[in-house]
Length: 461
Length: 77
Figure 1 (cartoon, each protein chain N blue to C red):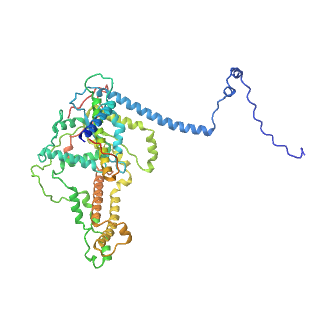
Figure 2 (figure 1 turned 180 degrees about the horizontal axis):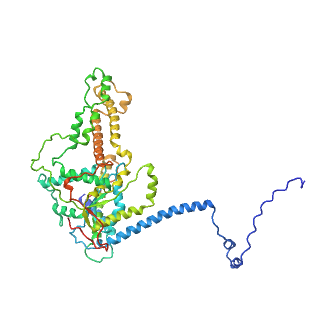
Figure 3 (figure 1 turned 90 degrees about the vertical axis):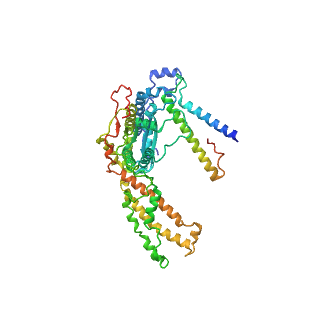
């Protein structure tokens, strides 16, 4: 029996436990358990090594980057901290800079540039006790309009059309508007990114060129819209509703909406301002020096690798932002040159195709909307005149009435037109607005001459 | 009624003073005047406090009007 059965294959014997080293014996006799004295560390397996290697280097790169960021920020803060320790009399005001940011093209997040400012520039300003006032444009062109409106309001006051805004309660130490303006002209303007730069220039140009006549945009839009005949009654509706509908499906006005979007029709308005007051000024009072902060906003699925690279190179942006803030705090400036027109122009290459094709997108949406609208108008009229009884659905969920449709259309047109106006300022390749009066007007902050750290203030050029 | 209003107002002011003082002012006093950093900080702190108070008040007002069962009386000043 025993020889017929094949012998079981000899199992590899487990290696005999290594003999205890003499030193281990001593430790054992001292009461340290064998598990401790027998511990022989060895390298983990290949897979573990790969895992540790990859995780460790990614984490290490990240942590290294953030530590560098902290160091850079601290070094800039330390260089300006002495300014925050200066005493300030109770009626004096600290320096307050104006910060302009606006929605980056093609990005749904309209506060991105503002967040960029807060993350990279602000810490140094806070350390230097420079107060700031952020103006963010939430839609394309909103910032530019805001700036223009403010300038126009200021011009109206200067021309004596509007009264000076009066203070209700006199507060000790309150500044007169002229003093306020003087303070602003010394304080500085921060502009984050090329898109903001373009909107800023456009707004300033618009503000100093536009008429002082108040414009009611809703009213103008309503007039422009009332002319295009979308809501007109087709004559043959009573006799042939189906035919009437088809004629309305292609509203003749829709394609014509495009041209007068970019250049508004200059129809004569009723004027309330004597013409000698409503003149375009020949020169512009110099604004505060500009701080041009480079900004980059990488978007899109295909750019994810670049986003990852950026994740580990935060220190570059921290350095750029802190450097900019430091220049602002130190206040050394030079005249604006023609090269500055191309400030941060590489940002324009980052815009997504979607943004540069915004007009096509809008006209497509608009065409679709008007096709829908024509149907809705027919329904609304039929129901309001009682030419047919409402269906069960329509009683449960009443369709919009004509008034509602008009309001909705107004809203949509307004949004489209504003977006298009903003787009015409911002799109890739559009030159920043320029005016002959801008010559020798702006100044730009540059690094201080003396790196020793004593503040150099531009004396309100 | 007026007394309660006054109490609310004083309370809010006290809380604001406390939080802004804690946040902005270095407890090791060296000079009588505030320095620049402190005054900028206090400025922003107070402005923020008022702004938040206003926003919360508005929100609660709208909740009161809209839901009916919304929170208590608005406590803005």
